[in-house]
Amino acid sequence: MGHHSGLSFRFTHAITRKPADSVASGIRAVDSGDPSGAKFREEHELYVNALQEAGLSVVVLPPLETFPDSCFVEDPAFCLPEGAIQLRPGTDSREGEGAAIRPALDAVFEKVVELPGTGHVDGGDVLTLDDVILIGLSARTDQAGADDFAKVLAEWGYKAEVCETPEGVLHFKTACSTLGDGVILATKVMADSGFFGDRKVIVVPEGEEYAANVIRVNDVVLVPEGYPKTLAAIEAAGFRTVVVPTHEARKVDGGLSCLSLRFAVS
Ligand code: CIR
Image (cartoon, rainbow, N blue to C red; front, side, top):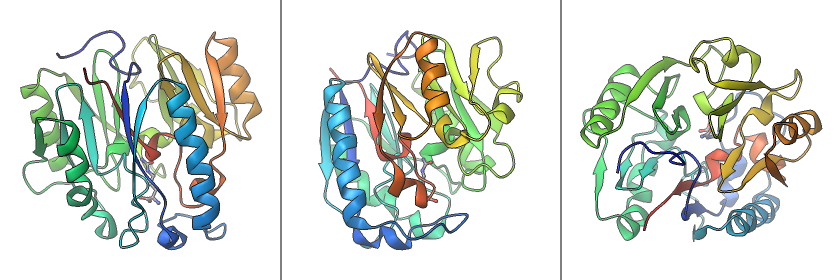
């Protein structure tokens, strides 16, 4: 199928995984208290509802206690209309999540391949735009992984570019999102990076950097609760918004995009 208008936001399906109680020991850069599995599952249900309201058929996988960060399903896989790629997350406690999500990929896609080689890629470092797929090098995604991933994408007919995620940013998409229709939402540091060429970039107001991670799903943009200036900026640009609470996810550096794999299949 390759690049086409709407590739970045027209979806039919999503895969999610309920947070486990072990999410209390999920990875975080700065400790602001442990998330509660029970509270996180309540927020997760609202997230799943929002995806359904946006028109998606949503698979909800059971909690996986052995992997504390396994509700962040975006990281161990990458999906396109023609198939899925099982990734190799770049931190020890998450590397096995690729194999854990594989059956869910096989259940939906005829074509599923594993990232070749020995490098690492976290899906959170991959930003799909309609005309190019950006892969951010980070503490999780290394050059070997990015190069091998780009090769698979090229074989499937997709153009990829490898970028340097700015220092101190967990994942490339922690600091930017596509709103579709050629518009990017990004933190100032990301906006100044030059990655986005002449696309229109909405800069996230200072102090609301967490809200750079939003997801456009069909006709709406899901925005985390508690970021009024960013919400207003997205609405002023003409997008319909839906606010979703992500307070528990945030305690372990997770956001809206990390919680699902979104894709279009016929
Ligand atoms: C981690 O550090 O891997 C998790 N605690 C958070 C993952 C967030 N995922 C994402 O940004 N795609």
